[in-house]
Amino acid sequence: MRLFLSLLLLVNAVGILAQNPDIELLKSIHVQRNQQWDGTARFISSTEYVIGFGLPLGVCAASWMKRDPELFKKGVNMSLALALNTASTFIIKRIVNRPRPAQTYSFISPLEYERNYSFPSGHTSNAFVTATSLSLQFKKWYVVVPAHLWAGAVAYSRLHMGVHYPSDVLAGAVLGSASALATYKVNQWIHRKYAKKYWTKWF
Image (cartoon, rainbow, N blue to C red; front, side, top):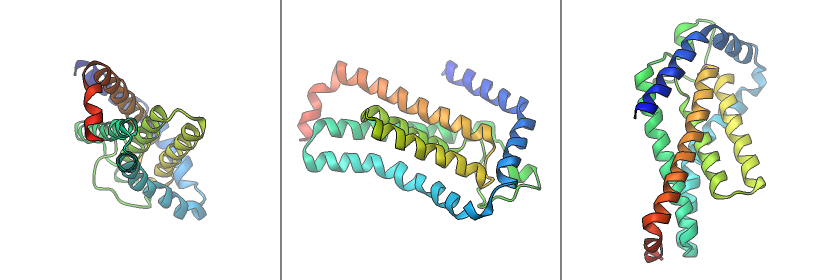
């Protein structure tokens, strides 16, 4: 908990100090954007819900149909990583209370209006927790590369749409990746120590 609070304070301080570069970079991406890509950005951003929540459930469902305990373990790990990330993002948003760019800068015209706070980007954190947990469970280049390209595209779409600062997106990527890695390591330890004999009883 002490480490978590220290990291939170550090990230918040960096965000405050980098406010000018933050808005200048957002301006160059959002204000000067090619508006022909607005529909594509909206679509990519919306895939976070379907893929982010659908993949863990899909892996669990596939494991049940195949009666595969190892695949079930992967699905559970991915689901727990998503839950940890969602809770962490929710808490940090309400601790930092950072307004959306459009609430501070009149030249930002977002492509959608969000009611919750800006830091960190929830879409980005969910995309990166999904990409990282998927990559940790299925360590093949044809999984790792597309997963992270998709997560990066979601992150960029949030800037194109003008709903987040670059530091929001960066923090979301770090938080999502860290949530996936932490869950993976803890689950490995628990599985080795206690749970190995219990997985097969469900199959």
